[in-house]
Amino acid sequence: MHAKTLCHHLSRLSCVTLLRENQHQPERDSSPLPFDVPDETGQPALRCRACGWVVTAEDQRITVNGRHDHVFFNPHGHVFEIGCFAHAPGAVPASSPSTEFSWFPGLTWQVVACAACGAHLGWRFQDVQDSDFFALILDRLVLDNSAAP
Image (cartoon, rainbow, N blue to C red; front, side, top):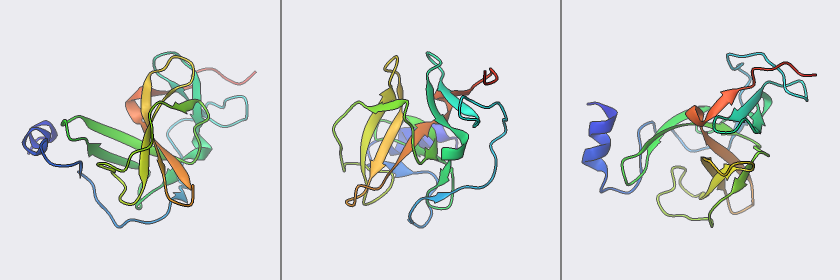
């Protein structure tokens, strides 16, 4: 069944994970991303597609539930392909934390937006001990095409 059709049929359910694996703590993912252009710190930068602001770097990539990338949909049927990152200093909170429809059970989520232009970039997930990670929408990020100075 096509993902959009599946989302349409399940849109009345609470948030359903298309890819579900055993829950566990985030870990560093040592596999490289398919780019090699460094930002000012020497790491490949991921920028906001809307304005070019640096959001995070390749070395912040982590795995959650055994994967870096996940596909989820919300109760409205919107499908998101996300990547998990330990830190995203270019993304700022844009909502209050919530526990409703969490894609990662037991964690609260908070919408995050680009610190420069306000574009929705994804979510910050946090546990009760204040450990957190960022789930960023992959098609809202672009590779830094310029070399470091």
